[in-house]
Image (cartoon, rainbow, N blue to C red):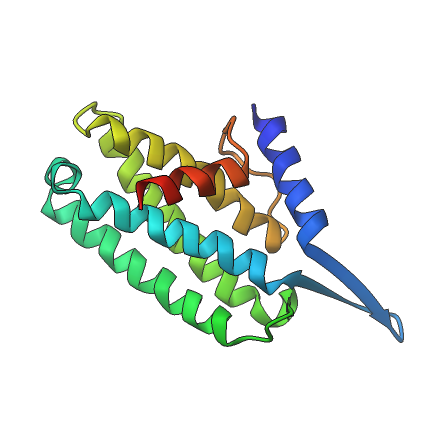
Amino acid sequence: MKIKIISIALALALSACSDTTTNGSTTYSANTAEALSIITSIDSGFYELLNDPNISKSLGSDNVAKIKAELTKISAMQAQLSAADPGTISVTKQKSILLTAESAANAALQIAKDVNATGLIPAPASTIIAALSALVPAIETFVGAVSVSEQSTMSVEEAKKIIAQHG
């Protein structure tokens, strides 16, 4: 399973990233639209969880507040990425945006996964959490963290579709 998600992440990285070398210095760039699409899907997925009263109740007010705090960070990074060059972003220059979004998404995801493991969250949440688990490693790919520990049988595109269906 770990190999499959790494393969998915690497495929995404290869399709959405490029490099250029000038005077011996290599700059890595990522497709802004793809990075933004992934972050937007993650943001939407968490909002879907929080907007469902049954899921919010199951998460508990403390966890909802923690996830909302992480969503604030994700939304801020989404806005910064939206303001970046519409074609490509320099992974070196924009790495902090991607790392902040990834860190916040991981923190929120871990809270949701911990509560989900108790079996107290309604079934639709499990599907959204699985989709989010497939999307977070895609951000990690943009910043070069391809030794992903998450296991997923879902592709990034399948994850996006699941989240869009719940929207």
